[in-house]
Image (tube, rainbow over all chains, first blue to last red; front, side, top):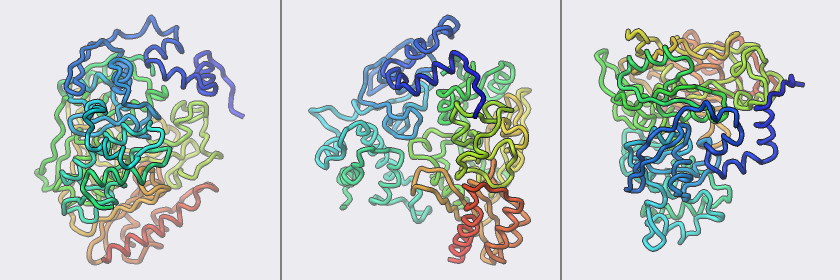
Amino acid sequence: MTEFNPSRRKFIQNTAVTSGALIAAKLVPEVEAKSVLQPAQATTEPANVNVLLKVNGSEHQMMIDPRTSLLDALRERLHLTGTKKGCDQGQCGACTVIVDGRRITSCLTLAVMQEGHDITTIEGLGTPTNLHPMQAAFIKHDGYQCGFCTPGQICSAVAMLEEVKAGMPSHVTADLTRPSEMTIIEFRERMSGNICRCGAYSNIQEAIAEVAGVRT
Amino acid sequence: MKAFTYDRATSAAEAASAVAKTTGSKFIAGGTNLLDLMKLQIETPSHLIDINDLGLDQIEPATNGGLRIGALVRNTDLAANEYVRRDYAVLSRALLAGASGQLRNQATTAGNLLQRTRCPYFYDTNMPCNKREPGRGCSALGGYSRMHAIVGISDACIATHPSDMAVAMRLLDATVETVRSNGLTRTIPIVELHRLPGNTPNIEHTLEPGELITAVLLPKPSGGTHIYRKVRDRASYAFALVSVAAIIQPDGSGKVALGGVAHKPWRVESAERKLQRGSKAVTKELLANARTTHDNAFKVQLVERTLASVLNDAKG
């Protein structure tokens, strides 16, 4: 039996976790969610900061709480809701976006840290009338069921193929002194940071292989 | 997440001085571990100093014939560097065995070394943990401890250092170059950087308050066959149960270090002198004084078998 030492904050946190209120809280912006959970802190919080984000070729000036993750800024402030919040811990890959040509998990970086960088989200890759080849391939090969992980999968896959083209090695690259190869084994290893709860992996693999010009 | 103020550093010395002066301040670089812990209020800095503008992102030949790796070199770039791939392949292999593609694009060299030594109970704020709240007790001792440490442990903590890269750095006898809050620089051999838990598992490294790692130095290449073998529950993107980093020379001599077994990268130089006698003799000395739980006792045999496999592979 562990010591029971209740404090109001801990009680609220624990209640939030067990009752699912945390899940509800995640649907509103992070800053607002916190003010609901911790009203006493609201008056002592540091001031918001001015940030200029460059997303999908457009610049956006905004005042934000420094705590705001890039993911929350994209979704809640810019209303680019294609990028999804899965685990919010960098484990699932649903929030993957491309920054300066590299895929990253947008939940594990602050929006203020991304000023001056080129951010590309799923909305910036293609549109319903002008699909990116990877988007078209996911549709053709049925590379999803519920679709929640799909924007992250597609952003990840697009940047991943560039990594292979650039000769970046992976865990399964047999010879580090030679350029890495476009193979299914490479794609599987390199996509391990994107989890698909529906298990559409084999179709995702086919979509990626088609775009890469690799036979399955 | 607790509220904090945010600033960008313009020089390493200024950043070190600022963090030392302001209570509750921390550096942020990749942020992949720090922000994760801040969301859970396990880390609660009141001020963040972003060091991403400091440069420190070059990999260049060093005067000692080795390599100087800037602290902010991303894990992806270090793993892909042509010198590292050619002369320090064990480092490339270790990096590529760690985390995911996305995280390796964000995580930095110094941040990887300084990520928290941790276990699931450290992350579970409903459970006592001596790292989070010194003196509250260790939930892993007597809890589920399959992933936990078997050597160098204490009654206060049995968490493992999660880094693969650090195991290779320890094998390679890397040194870290730092700048202190008074603006002076120093170098620290990696063996002296990470601490065992003892009675203060909350203190994981020997850096002074505000001291900032600016580079990691590798000695001259040693040749030999470089191998990093990571045994884990999934084929990719999982922490090691046990990992073995090794550089084996044609005559069977060499070096070996372990991940997944201790609070820091685990290496016992005296054990390496037994490499030519095989994995059993080496493991016996590497894991002398091992203290296992019911859940993690398998790691002793797993180390021996993984090492046997590595030594076999090294023969070509």
